[in-house]
Length: 181
Length: 72
Image (cartoon, each protein chain N blue to C red):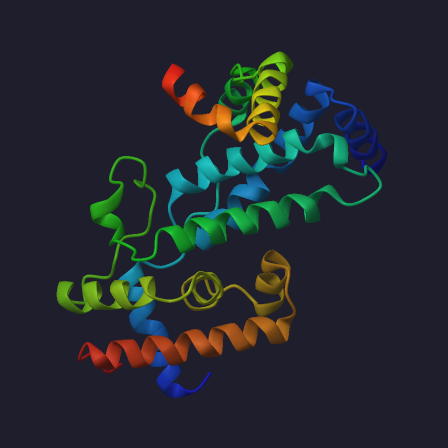
């Protein structure tokens, strides 16, 4: 299998579209999984997955087939997701956002009142993109720190620091809004 | 994570809707292929050469700038 992937990478770097298709099909699910955990919107995650591979395709001539494809893809995907998060600073509640495409998306807990939910979503949306991505994966997705570190391309201590700062900012922002968890 | 952080996490999880479904529901290759096959806008090299020549002329003969602007 590894030999096959290496051969495909070699062909891909020479511009073979069929080899690119093989790589795309092999990695699209994984790339989508990394992105959706950060942006939490299936439609956006699909668009960003395609954008990730488009950038990979355009940069194929610079790709060294001896280096791991997954790490390269992850770096591009993470940067795109962070870019998206920093553009879309204040997040809207998901049920108002993309109803048809987000059908599989988890719904908010009815035990949390609409007012509190709105405040939490607003406070979360105000977090800087890097902190928001780490906090999303740690607090909501409950991914292990090692996995978050792997996706974000930082150390486990880096993840801990980002989550700590995010929690502190979130708490402060919620307190300003009159919410004390 | 302490107890207070645990309460905050619980609130965030409830408000934001829990973990996202990580499974890709459909193949994205057709969309990717459309992207690859979409013709890109290419500016021919002679247009670049013309623009460069014009710029050079304007740098060498700045008094020609009003004349060029008049012609636009």
